Figure 1 (cartoon, rainbow, N blue to C red):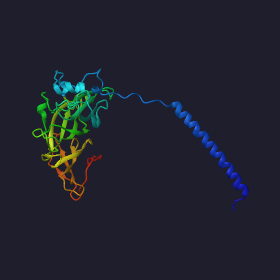
Figure 2: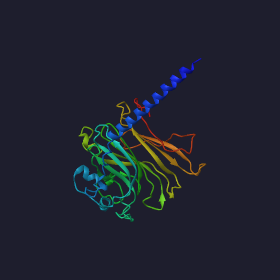
Figure 3: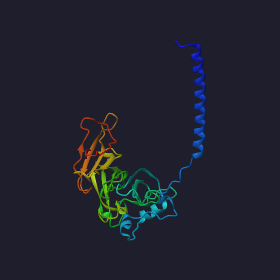
Figure 4: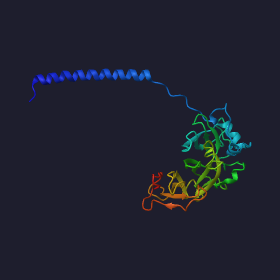
Length: 310
């Protein structure tokens, strides 16, 4: 049994400990305030800053041959809304950063009124100085694109969005996307998913500052069915990853998405599908359904382990 004297001494020591703790906390707060430094200003993208150049065709970025069209000129002025962004850093050169988004610059004028030149498309925003500056462009194949790179696009859509990005270890960048509008029947949607490939114009041995610069191709990976208001077979919620292990599967591109077909308990039925490319995005395997017994699921994600397992 502890004595009354022990309790009194312990109470005194407790008060001293509390006072010391309060003093230390106050000193820490003063130190934190004294050392606080505000964040540096954000770097604005080219299309946000009218003092800088506007949208540049990827064809011009690679060849230095001048090219423009009505869409790029409108995008240079409209500085329209952008959302659902993605960004990826080149593993060979961290100074090279590429971003993308749903870019509405072909849709709206500078004052927000409808422009009518095209629909939402994937932006391509490139930095070669670690994000200090960016050059803005669009992934080739948009409505109104008449550049030599337009013929490299093999997707059947009038609009596209929801980008996902991934690099390999050899200077290639892969951009996945979903599309909805039928260019032949604008009142219908069909929900295709596709992947674009950008590479170093001088090959994997070229200067890494040129990694992921040249648009090579874009291919449909899975096609939906034409129907009003997304009511047909519709693909969405994409994910992409590349094997960078240096092993036997190095360079393989993996792409997944959710297929919506309607009729589920909550008004739709969705399953996860998966494909693989072994030729750097030129072709992809037939879609494989991963969720054989589970339904009403979406938002796949992909990771590659150190031994190449997916």
